[in-house]
Length: 198
Image (cartoon, rainbow, N blue to C red; front, side, top):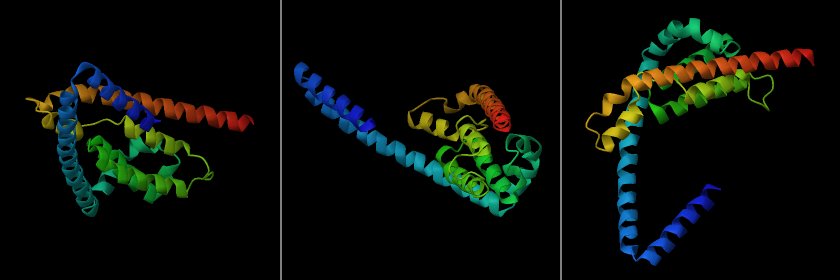
């Protein structure tokens, strides 16, 4: 579907450019946009590599285990089933920590490992467990202490104050995360009640 939409947009742009005699401007904009896209991707790849390395160092230094113990009182209620497994607990903590640090795409491999651990202990492997759904929702609505990807995007776009968004991001991300977790746990509780009645 995205391919069809992209084709329609490109075809409409070319037709409008031909009708208005601005084909040279459209061609120039396409080339300039492609060049800026490559620069942006390289910038984000560097940020992703940096934070992936930081997380690997933290794991080797035992900091993830320490963070797991620090976050345990909260996360044991957010992921009640998966928290019983020590390996799943460490992977979940790493994924949540990466999202809290705001490292964007570099958090994806950590979340995938956590999902793999949870899937291994899933009694119904054909469907996602409640904890897997909660992790997915929390990954996209996580609190972000340092929104590194957004800061990198603002810096790449030439912002004079790329860090000015930090406090608004704290407020919005914490509110979204709290609402998401409450909705997930509430839906899980309701679903368990329905299954018990069945």
